[in-house]
Image (cartoon, rainbow, N blue to C red; front, side):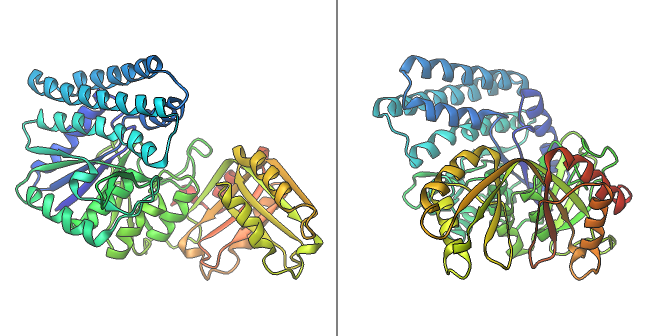
Length: 468
């Protein structure tokens, strides 16, 4: 069996965790599995690097040195715990010190120039995975197992030049990855590849954006034509809801790609939909597994949903930290392009719209965005649109939450929406906004945030999700 295993930030968060990761990898390699490994940065490091990068343009060299010393110490501590061989420890420590030294020079350059471009930001955040991958490589090597370490660039992942959110050039990438990693897998050597990082055709470092390490795993999985891709995380699989809200929540044994994409958008600990793109085309199964409970087979994501589960609703999610923006105006009625102007204003200001609902009257449009963007959204819409003949008022509500009810079998099943809304009504809760796409896989609606938990519990109980 040929597998790509991806380990996230919590899975490689400490030296002890990395030692555990090496145990898992080598155990499967000994059982006639050909394994390629993709790793994220240590927990919290990418966020720290982003913060450092933004601060560097207005910091001094002394502050940069203080921050990089903390990063060095964090990784040296992980090395000493993850690796027992003094020789391998020394080798990995040297790589780490050299990498930190390079990072310090990059940050100092940003400090002197006083500017952080998308290209230089990608370069800075790439250091997280460049620091973690050698430690994982060293821990696997410490298990007397043959292994080699690669950056995404060295592995052959080539993208366009859209820094911060690059897309892979799959044909070229597939050719290079098969050429560079394929022979190693056949010999039983374990490649350890940095997630998130790639390079454009000129060899300049790029990153593949949100869900980056998962994306790297699926890119490699497709290029190497593996049997499965395993995403190791800190949960057993994808759940029917958040166990913190409903302790009786169950793990879903199997989902379709579409279901997984819907659930990932709404905060389930699954893969980012962008990362699912490559495997959907090649129909390669993905499995979400827990490093804490490795005997659990987790949630399998395939082309078709589990035929044994016939229930219409499979999961319900609660999304907090959101706000509703309402745009009203009689001038929007029958005016072509009025909605387009609203979306254009928000898009130009990097405000993503999570959910939209509008009435056939065309006089009102309601949108859900992240709560921390409300101020920017309100000010930009007012400046750009009010007083120009179409929009008369822009209002916001920031005490709301979104409830998303999902399942492939909802499609074509009569009465699902009726049952959902009847359940909410029985709980004495008012719905502020509703949206459903033509896929029928998801019904989302807005309620007051104080009512969100009660709604999730009521729907979970009504549809018997604790018995799946």
